[in-house]
Image (cartoon, rainbow, N blue to C red):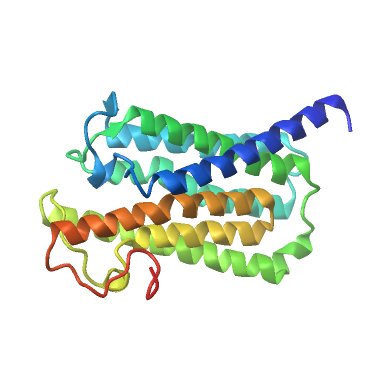
Length: 258
C-alpha cells in the first residue's frame, strides 16, 4: 500500500468515525432540542433561507460526491457498481432536484446553519460510501446480484422509497387542502404512525446497508435512525399538543411499538 492510498484510507476511517459520532450526538441532542425547520421552525438560529434553496443545496453533495468516485474509480463499468450508483441516485436525485420543487412558496424558511450542517453530512456520507464501494474494495462479483442479502436489501430500499414518497405526497396534498396550515393526516400508514415518511426513509437506508453489506452502509443507516427517530417523536408530541382530538392509539414512527 503506497503512502497516498494509506492516507486516503486514513481519511476514510476518520470520516466514518465522525459520522458515527455525529449520529450519537444528534440522537441525544434531538430528544431535547427539535431541529428548527419545518413545523418546528423558530427564530434565533441566525440567517434563514428559503426551504427550496435549502433542500437543493444541502442534498446535492450526495448526488455528486459519490458520482465522482464512481466515475473516477476502477469499477465504473462493472455491473454491480452500476446498480449501486443507480439505486443511490434514484433517492438523491429525487430528494435534491425533484422534491424541492414541490415545496410550496409559502413554506417556512430554513436556518442556513442547519442547511450547512446537512450539506457537510451529505458530503461526508457521499465520500465514505463512494470511496468504499468504488475505490477501497474490489468490485463486487456479478453473483452478488443474486445474493439473498442484496435481494432483501433491494426490496427494503424500494419499499422504503415508496413509503417515503407516498407519505410526503399525502402531507403536501393535506397542506394544500388546509391552505398551508397543518391538519391531522388520515388514511394509509398515517392511521398507525405519525411519521411514515421517516419510517420509509429508515427502511430505505437499512436496505442500502443490507444490499451493499458494508460498514459505510451500516453507519448511514445508523445515522438516519439517530436523526429521524427523535424527530418523529417530536412530531408526534407536536400533533398531540396541537390537536386534542389526535388519535390516542397512533404511534410516532414504528407501528404498534413506538
